[in-house]
Image (tube, rainbow, N blue to C red; front, side, top):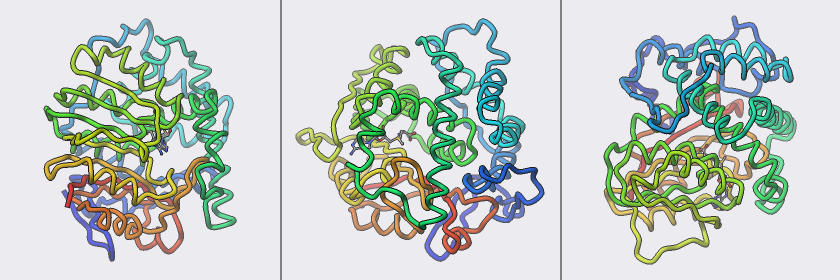
Length: 372
Ligand SMILES: C[S@@+](CC[C@H](N)C(=O)[O-])C[C@H]1O[C@@H](n2cnc3c(N)ncnc32)[C@H](O)[C@@H]1O
Protein backbone atom coordinates (compact mmCIF):
# COMPACT_ATOMS: atom_id res chain seq x y z
CA UNK A 1 0.00 0.00 0.00
CA UNK A 2 1.36 3.43 -0.78
CA UNK A 3 0.26 6.71 0.63
CA UNK A 4 1.45 9.85 -1.13
CA UNK A 5 1.04 13.08 0.70
CA UNK A 6 -0.04 15.93 -1.52
CA UNK A 7 -0.78 19.34 -0.11
CA UNK A 8 -4.23 18.33 0.97
CA UNK A 9 -4.65 14.68 0.30
CA UNK A 10 -3.61 11.38 1.55
CA UNK A 11 -3.43 9.50 -1.74
CA UNK A 12 -3.92 5.81 -1.54
CA UNK A 13 -3.77 3.78 -4.68
CA UNK A 14 -3.44 0.26 -3.47
CA UNK A 15 -0.38 -1.96 -3.34
CA UNK A 16 1.64 -0.34 -6.09
CA UNK A 17 5.36 0.32 -6.35
CA UNK A 18 6.06 3.99 -6.32
CA UNK A 19 8.16 3.94 -9.48
CA UNK A 20 5.20 2.41 -11.28
CA UNK A 21 2.69 4.86 -9.97
CA UNK A 22 0.28 6.12 -12.60
CA UNK A 23 1.00 9.51 -11.14
CA UNK A 24 4.25 9.44 -13.03
CA UNK A 25 2.85 7.73 -16.11
CA UNK A 26 2.11 9.33 -19.41
CA UNK A 27 -0.44 8.65 -22.08
CA UNK A 28 1.39 10.75 -24.68
CA UNK A 29 2.57 7.74 -26.64
CA UNK A 30 -0.85 6.26 -26.92
CA UNK A 31 -2.80 6.39 -30.06
CA UNK A 32 -5.63 8.62 -29.00
CA UNK A 33 -9.03 9.71 -29.98
CA UNK A 34 -8.74 13.21 -28.64
CA UNK A 35 -12.22 13.76 -27.37
CA UNK A 36 -11.97 10.77 -25.14
CA UNK A 37 -8.53 11.84 -23.94
CA UNK A 38 -9.92 15.20 -22.95
CA UNK A 39 -12.45 13.58 -20.86
CA UNK A 40 -11.38 10.47 -19.08
CA UNK A 41 -8.56 10.29 -16.58
CA UNK A 42 -6.73 7.83 -18.73
CA UNK A 43 -3.63 7.94 -16.61
CA UNK A 44 -5.33 5.22 -14.74
CA UNK A 45 -4.70 2.89 -17.67
CA UNK A 46 -1.30 2.54 -16.14
CA UNK A 47 -2.99 1.85 -12.84
CA UNK A 48 -5.17 -0.83 -14.35
CA UNK A 49 -2.22 -2.53 -16.00
CA UNK A 50 -0.42 -2.54 -12.69
CA UNK A 51 -3.48 -3.77 -10.93
CA UNK A 52 -3.66 -6.58 -13.47
CA UNK A 53 -0.30 -7.81 -12.50
CA UNK A 54 -0.06 -7.04 -8.86
CA UNK A 55 -3.21 -6.19 -7.10
CA UNK A 56 -6.10 -7.92 -5.75
CA UNK A 57 -6.24 -10.96 -3.87
CA UNK A 58 -9.78 -9.66 -4.03
CA UNK A 59 -12.18 -12.27 -5.19
CA UNK A 60 -14.75 -10.44 -7.19
CA UNK A 61 -18.35 -11.36 -7.12
CA UNK A 62 -19.87 -13.98 -9.30
CA UNK A 63 -23.43 -14.33 -8.36
CA UNK A 64 -24.38 -17.92 -8.01
CA UNK A 65 -26.90 -19.24 -8.46
CA UNK A 66 -28.92 -16.91 -10.59
CA UNK A 67 -26.67 -16.00 -13.46
CA UNK A 68 -28.27 -17.92 -16.33
CA UNK A 69 -25.84 -20.30 -17.94
CA UNK A 70 -24.48 -18.54 -20.94
CA UNK A 71 -25.39 -19.99 -24.31
CA UNK A 72 -22.53 -18.37 -26.05
CA UNK A 73 -21.15 -15.85 -23.67
CA UNK A 74 -17.52 -16.23 -24.71
CA UNK A 75 -17.76 -13.35 -27.17
CA UNK A 76 -20.40 -11.31 -25.42
CA UNK A 77 -18.00 -8.55 -24.41
CA UNK A 78 -16.61 -8.35 -27.95
CA UNK A 79 -20.13 -8.39 -29.43
CA UNK A 80 -21.10 -5.57 -27.10
CA UNK A 81 -18.04 -3.47 -27.88
CA UNK A 82 -18.51 -4.00 -31.63
CA UNK A 83 -22.00 -2.58 -31.34
CA UNK A 84 -20.70 0.35 -29.29
CA UNK A 85 -17.93 1.24 -31.71
CA UNK A 86 -20.04 0.71 -34.83
CA UNK A 87 -22.31 3.47 -33.59
CA UNK A 88 -19.54 5.51 -32.00
CA UNK A 89 -16.26 5.09 -33.94
CA UNK A 90 -14.63 7.88 -31.93
CA UNK A 91 -14.71 5.54 -28.98
CA UNK A 92 -12.86 2.71 -30.78
CA UNK A 93 -9.34 3.19 -29.55
CA UNK A 94 -10.56 3.77 -26.01
CA UNK A 95 -12.45 0.49 -26.19
CA UNK A 96 -9.48 -1.36 -27.62
CA UNK A 97 -7.30 -0.19 -24.76
CA UNK A 98 -9.98 -1.01 -22.25
CA UNK A 99 -10.30 -4.58 -23.49
CA UNK A 100 -6.56 -5.02 -23.81
CA UNK A 101 -5.90 -4.08 -20.22
CA UNK A 102 -9.03 -5.59 -18.70
CA UNK A 103 -8.42 -8.11 -15.92
CA UNK A 104 -9.92 -11.54 -16.33
CA UNK A 105 -12.15 -11.12 -13.27
CA UNK A 106 -13.44 -7.80 -14.61
CA UNK A 107 -14.18 -9.42 -17.96
CA UNK A 108 -16.11 -12.17 -16.18
CA UNK A 109 -18.08 -9.60 -14.22
CA UNK A 110 -18.91 -7.59 -17.33
CA UNK A 111 -19.98 -10.77 -19.12
CA UNK A 112 -22.14 -11.71 -16.14
CA UNK A 113 -23.70 -8.27 -16.02
CA UNK A 114 -24.49 -8.38 -19.75
CA UNK A 115 -26.01 -11.84 -19.33
CA UNK A 116 -28.11 -10.54 -16.44
CA UNK A 117 -29.36 -7.66 -18.59
CA UNK A 118 -30.18 -9.99 -21.49
CA UNK A 119 -31.99 -12.35 -19.13
CA UNK A 120 -34.33 -9.58 -17.98
CA UNK A 121 -35.27 -8.88 -21.58
CA UNK A 122 -32.87 -6.15 -22.66
CA UNK A 123 -31.07 -6.43 -25.97
CA UNK A 124 -27.36 -5.99 -26.61
CA UNK A 125 -28.25 -3.14 -28.99
CA UNK A 126 -30.11 -1.37 -26.20
CA UNK A 127 -27.17 -1.84 -23.82
CA UNK A 128 -24.70 -0.51 -26.40
CA UNK A 129 -26.99 2.46 -26.97
CA UNK A 130 -27.21 3.01 -23.21
CA UNK A 131 -23.46 2.98 -22.89
CA UNK A 132 -23.03 5.35 -25.85
CA UNK A 133 -25.61 7.66 -24.30
CA UNK A 134 -23.50 8.18 -21.21
CA UNK A 135 -20.30 8.45 -23.27
CA UNK A 136 -21.69 11.06 -25.64
CA UNK A 137 -23.63 13.06 -23.07
CA UNK A 138 -20.64 13.21 -20.74
CA UNK A 139 -18.49 14.40 -23.62
CA UNK A 140 -20.93 17.22 -24.34
CA UNK A 141 -20.76 18.27 -20.71
CA UNK A 142 -16.96 18.08 -20.82
CA UNK A 143 -16.94 20.52 -23.73
CA UNK A 144 -19.20 22.87 -21.81
CA UNK A 145 -16.92 22.58 -18.81
CA UNK A 146 -13.79 23.30 -20.86
CA UNK A 147 -15.38 26.44 -22.18
CA UNK A 148 -17.12 27.79 -19.10
CA UNK A 149 -15.04 26.29 -16.27
CA UNK A 150 -18.19 25.24 -14.46
CA UNK A 151 -20.89 22.59 -14.65
CA UNK A 152 -23.85 23.48 -16.82
CA UNK A 153 -26.39 23.25 -14.00
CA UNK A 154 -26.21 24.15 -10.35
CA UNK A 155 -29.72 23.36 -9.18
CA UNK A 156 -31.49 20.03 -8.93
CA UNK A 157 -34.69 21.27 -10.56
CA UNK A 158 -32.80 22.42 -13.68
CA UNK A 159 -32.11 18.83 -14.71
CA UNK A 160 -34.32 16.61 -12.60
CA UNK A 161 -37.05 16.23 -15.21
CA UNK A 162 -34.75 15.51 -18.11
CA UNK A 163 -32.66 13.00 -16.13
CA UNK A 164 -33.97 11.49 -12.89
CA UNK A 165 -37.67 11.70 -13.72
CA UNK A 166 -37.39 10.79 -17.41
CA UNK A 167 -37.86 7.05 -17.13
CA UNK A 168 -36.48 6.08 -20.56
CA UNK A 169 -33.43 8.33 -20.27
CA UNK A 170 -32.65 7.40 -16.69
CA UNK A 171 -32.81 3.68 -17.43
CA UNK A 172 -30.33 4.04 -20.27
CA UNK A 173 -28.12 6.27 -18.17
CA UNK A 174 -28.06 3.76 -15.30
CA UNK A 175 -27.40 0.68 -17.47
CA UNK A 176 -24.67 2.67 -19.22
CA UNK A 177 -23.21 3.78 -15.89
CA UNK A 178 -23.18 0.23 -14.54
CA UNK A 179 -21.18 -0.87 -17.60
CA UNK A 180 -18.61 1.89 -17.07
CA UNK A 181 -17.71 0.17 -13.79
CA UNK A 182 -16.00 -2.49 -15.92
CA UNK A 183 -14.73 -0.39 -18.83
CA UNK A 184 -13.58 2.95 -17.48
CA UNK A 185 -10.34 2.66 -15.56
CA UNK A 186 -11.31 5.34 -13.06
CA UNK A 187 -14.56 3.52 -12.25
CA UNK A 188 -12.77 0.15 -12.18
CA UNK A 189 -10.36 1.59 -9.60
CA UNK A 190 -13.21 2.80 -7.38
CA UNK A 191 -15.04 -0.47 -7.76
CA UNK A 192 -11.89 -2.32 -6.68
CA UNK A 193 -11.60 0.03 -3.70
CA UNK A 194 -15.21 -0.71 -2.76
CA UNK A 195 -14.62 -4.47 -2.89
CA UNK A 196 -11.29 -4.33 -1.08
CA UNK A 197 -12.55 -2.22 1.81
CA UNK A 198 -16.00 -3.79 2.15
CA UNK A 199 -16.59 -5.11 5.67
CA UNK A 200 -17.22 -8.71 4.67
CA UNK A 201 -19.64 -10.62 6.80
CA UNK A 202 -20.89 -7.38 8.40
CA UNK A 203 -24.16 -7.80 10.26
CA UNK A 204 -26.79 -5.22 11.16
CA UNK A 205 -28.58 -2.88 8.77
CA UNK A 206 -27.26 -1.66 5.43
CA UNK A 207 -28.24 1.65 3.84
CA UNK A 208 -27.42 2.73 0.31
CA UNK A 209 -28.20 6.24 -0.87
CA UNK A 210 -28.71 6.54 -4.63
CA UNK A 211 -28.21 2.89 -5.63
CA UNK A 212 -29.07 3.81 -9.25
CA UNK A 213 -28.49 0.66 -11.32
CA UNK A 214 -28.34 -1.46 -8.15
CA UNK A 215 -25.06 -3.20 -8.88
CA UNK A 216 -23.35 -2.11 -5.66
CA UNK A 217 -26.51 -2.91 -3.71
CA UNK A 218 -26.40 -6.47 -5.01
CA UNK A 219 -22.70 -6.83 -4.24
CA UNK A 220 -23.27 -5.61 -0.70
CA UNK A 221 -25.95 -8.24 -0.28
CA UNK A 222 -23.45 -10.87 -1.32
CA UNK A 223 -20.47 -9.67 0.65
CA UNK A 224 -22.26 -8.71 3.85
CA UNK A 225 -24.34 -10.70 6.29
CA UNK A 226 -26.90 -7.98 6.93
CA UNK A 227 -30.31 -8.48 8.49
CA UNK A 228 -31.76 -5.74 6.33
CA UNK A 229 -30.78 -3.80 3.21
CA UNK A 230 -32.36 -0.46 2.44
CA UNK A 231 -31.91 1.58 -0.73
CA UNK A 232 -33.14 5.17 -0.98
CA UNK A 233 -33.27 6.81 -4.40
CA UNK A 234 -35.11 9.85 -5.71
CA UNK A 235 -35.60 8.39 -9.19
CA UNK A 236 -38.38 5.92 -9.92
CA UNK A 237 -36.26 4.40 -12.70
CA UNK A 238 -33.35 3.78 -10.32
CA UNK A 239 -35.71 2.27 -7.77
CA UNK A 240 -37.11 -0.04 -10.46
CA UNK A 241 -33.63 -1.12 -11.61
CA UNK A 242 -32.49 -1.82 -8.06
CA UNK A 243 -35.68 -3.77 -7.32
CA UNK A 244 -35.10 -5.80 -10.52
CA UNK A 245 -31.66 -6.77 -9.33
CA UNK A 246 -32.98 -7.64 -5.84
CA UNK A 247 -35.64 -9.86 -7.40
CA UNK A 248 -33.39 -11.51 -9.92
CA UNK A 249 -30.70 -12.44 -7.41
CA UNK A 250 -33.22 -13.51 -4.80
CA UNK A 251 -31.60 -11.24 -2.26
CA UNK A 252 -34.65 -11.57 -0.03
CA UNK A 253 -33.84 -15.21 0.54
CA UNK A 254 -30.81 -13.94 2.42
CA UNK A 255 -32.16 -10.85 4.18
CA UNK A 256 -34.90 -8.24 4.11
CA UNK A 257 -34.40 -5.85 1.21
CA UNK A 258 -36.32 -2.68 0.56
CA UNK A 259 -35.89 0.09 -1.99
CA UNK A 260 -37.66 3.36 -1.26
CA UNK A 261 -38.33 6.14 -3.76
CA UNK A 262 -37.63 9.40 -1.98
CA UNK A 263 -35.21 12.26 -1.55
CA UNK A 264 -32.66 11.11 1.01
CA UNK A 265 -32.95 14.46 2.80
CA UNK A 266 -36.63 13.89 3.49
CA UNK A 267 -36.11 10.30 4.53
CA UNK A 268 -35.81 9.26 8.13
CA UNK A 269 -36.39 6.22 10.23
CA UNK A 270 -36.74 6.80 13.94
CA UNK A 271 -33.64 5.90 15.91
CA UNK A 272 -32.35 3.60 13.19
CA UNK A 273 -28.58 3.20 12.99
CA UNK A 274 -26.85 1.39 10.15
CA UNK A 275 -23.74 -0.76 10.33
CA UNK A 276 -22.82 0.08 6.74
CA UNK A 277 -23.76 3.11 4.64
CA UNK A 278 -22.81 3.39 0.96
CA UNK A 279 -23.25 6.47 -1.20
CA UNK A 280 -21.59 6.11 -4.61
CA UNK A 281 -21.54 9.10 -6.95
CA UNK A 282 -24.27 11.11 -5.33
CA UNK A 283 -22.51 14.04 -3.59
CA UNK A 284 -21.79 15.84 -6.84
CA UNK A 285 -25.47 15.43 -7.79
CA UNK A 286 -26.90 17.39 -4.90
CA UNK A 287 -27.14 21.07 -4.04
CA UNK A 288 -25.98 20.73 -0.46
CA UNK A 289 -23.48 17.86 -0.09
CA UNK A 290 -22.80 18.81 3.54
CA UNK A 291 -26.40 18.10 4.50
CA UNK A 292 -26.11 14.62 2.96
CA UNK A 293 -22.93 13.86 4.87
CA UNK A 294 -24.35 15.25 8.14
CA UNK A 295 -27.44 13.10 7.66
CA UNK A 296 -25.17 10.08 7.15
CA UNK A 297 -23.29 10.94 10.35
CA UNK A 298 -26.64 11.09 12.16
CA UNK A 299 -27.53 7.58 10.96
CA UNK A 300 -24.17 6.13 12.00
CA UNK A 301 -22.67 4.74 15.16
CA UNK A 302 -18.90 5.01 15.73
CA UNK A 303 -18.35 1.57 14.16
CA UNK A 304 -20.45 2.16 11.02
CA UNK A 305 -18.53 1.50 7.81
CA UNK A 306 -19.25 4.47 5.55
CA UNK A 307 -18.23 4.33 1.89
CA UNK A 308 -18.58 7.44 -0.28
CA UNK A 309 -17.35 8.24 -3.79
CA UNK A 310 -17.42 11.48 -5.71
CA UNK A 311 -15.38 13.38 -8.29
CA UNK A 312 -13.67 16.67 -8.97
CA UNK A 313 -13.80 18.61 -12.25
CA UNK A 314 -15.80 15.79 -13.80
CA UNK A 315 -18.87 17.08 -15.61
CA UNK A 316 -21.91 14.94 -16.38
CA UNK A 317 -25.51 15.69 -17.29
CA UNK A 318 -26.58 15.69 -13.67
CA UNK A 319 -23.52 16.97 -11.77
CA UNK A 320 -24.35 20.20 -10.00
CA UNK A 321 -21.89 20.51 -7.10
CA UNK A 322 -18.47 21.25 -8.49
CA UNK A 323 -15.56 20.20 -6.28
CA UNK A 324 -12.37 21.66 -7.70
CA UNK A 325 -9.93 20.09 -5.25
CA UNK A 326 -9.73 17.20 -2.85
CA UNK A 327 -9.68 19.71 -0.04
CA UNK A 328 -13.10 20.99 -1.13
CA UNK A 329 -14.54 17.54 -0.51
CA UNK A 330 -12.55 16.76 2.60
CA UNK A 331 -13.47 20.02 4.31
CA UNK A 332 -17.14 19.16 3.85
CA UNK A 333 -16.58 15.63 5.15
CA UNK A 334 -14.82 16.76 8.29
CA UNK A 335 -17.26 19.58 9.02
CA UNK A 336 -20.14 17.10 8.74
CA UNK A 337 -19.17 15.04 11.77
CA UNK A 338 -17.19 12.41 9.84
CA UNK A 339 -13.54 11.47 9.68
CA UNK A 340 -11.56 9.93 6.84
CA UNK A 341 -10.17 6.44 7.39
CA UNK A 342 -8.92 5.70 3.88
CA UNK A 343 -8.83 7.51 0.56
CA UNK A 344 -8.61 6.23 -3.00
CA UNK A 345 -7.62 9.08 -5.26
CA UNK A 346 -7.73 8.40 -9.00
CA UNK A 347 -6.16 11.26 -10.88
CA UNK A 348 -6.35 12.21 -14.54
CA UNK A 349 -4.01 10.85 -17.21
CA UNK A 350 -0.72 10.47 -15.49
CA UNK A 351 -1.05 13.80 -13.73
CA UNK A 352 -0.21 14.63 -10.18
CA UNK A 353 -2.92 15.80 -7.81
CA UNK A 354 -1.42 19.30 -7.96
CA UNK A 355 -1.58 19.29 -11.77
CA UNK A 356 -5.19 18.12 -11.66
CA UNK A 357 -6.07 21.00 -9.37
CA UNK A 358 -4.14 23.55 -11.40
CA UNK A 359 -5.56 22.44 -14.76
CA UNK A 360 -9.06 21.50 -13.58
CA UNK A 361 -8.65 17.88 -14.69
CA UNK A 362 -11.06 15.14 -13.72
CA UNK A 363 -10.32 13.17 -10.58
CA UNK A 364 -12.36 10.40 -9.00
CA UNK A 365 -12.15 9.80 -5.32
CA UNK A 366 -13.48 7.24 -2.85
CA UNK A 367 -13.47 7.39 0.93
CA UNK A 368 -13.96 5.03 3.79
CA UNK A 369 -15.32 7.19 6.60
CA UNK A 370 -16.35 6.89 10.24
CA UNK A 371 -18.46 9.02 12.47
CA UNK A 372 -16.07 11.49 14.16
C1 LIG B 1 -24.87 8.62 -10.67
S1 LIG B 1 -26.07 7.65 -9.90
C2 LIG B 1 -25.06 6.62 -8.86
C3 LIG B 1 -25.41 5.17 -8.97
C4 LIG B 1 -24.52 4.25 -8.14
N1 LIG B 1 -24.60 4.59 -6.74
C5 LIG B 1 -23.08 4.30 -8.59
O1 LIG B 1 -22.19 4.63 -7.78
O2 LIG B 1 -22.79 3.97 -9.77
C6 LIG B 1 -26.79 8.77 -8.75
C7 LIG B 1 -28.04 8.22 -8.11
O3 LIG B 1 -28.39 9.09 -7.02
C8 LIG B 1 -29.78 9.32 -7.05
N2 LIG B 1 -30.04 10.58 -6.34
C9 LIG B 1 -29.76 11.83 -6.74
N3 LIG B 1 -30.19 12.72 -5.84
C10 LIG B 1 -30.76 12.02 -4.83
C11 LIG B 1 -31.40 12.37 -3.61
N4 LIG B 1 -31.55 13.66 -3.25
N5 LIG B 1 -31.88 11.38 -2.81
C12 LIG B 1 -31.75 10.08 -3.18
N6 LIG B 1 -31.17 9.70 -4.34
C13 LIG B 1 -30.67 10.64 -5.15
C14 LIG B 1 -30.10 9.35 -8.53
O4 LIG B 1 -31.46 9.13 -8.78
C15 LIG B 1 -29.22 8.22 -9.06
O5 LIG B 1 -29.89 6.99 -9.00
